Length: 129
Image 1 (tube, helix red, strand yellow):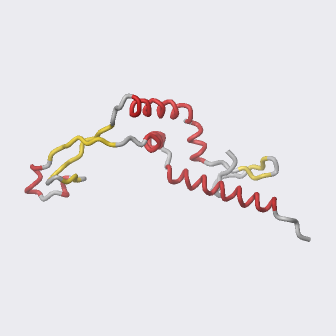
Image 2 (cartoon, rainbow, N blue to C red):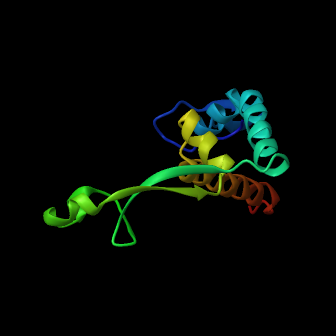
């Protein structure tokens, strides 16, 4: 990993370039083999075997409610649990399992690409006297 664009971390010279480390990318790389195996298994379950994930939700008046407090007290005995199927977002589940924030990971990648573009434009620009 070449770039960490966070000033709180040390920068190290590498082949004349500044080397930055990406904390989330580094974490992702550390769990890559294991997460790919788990992801492959989950994909096999859903795509090949047709297994779906489901969860229970609280329902009142044909509407999903987050909490019993969302229902008038006199109607709380009408709340029931219903099982609903969900599409399994394997990347999101694996990121959550490994504690990787996908939004911050994307920000790191964009920052790294911007820094690479900046460095390349400096190398490509002619030297002026």
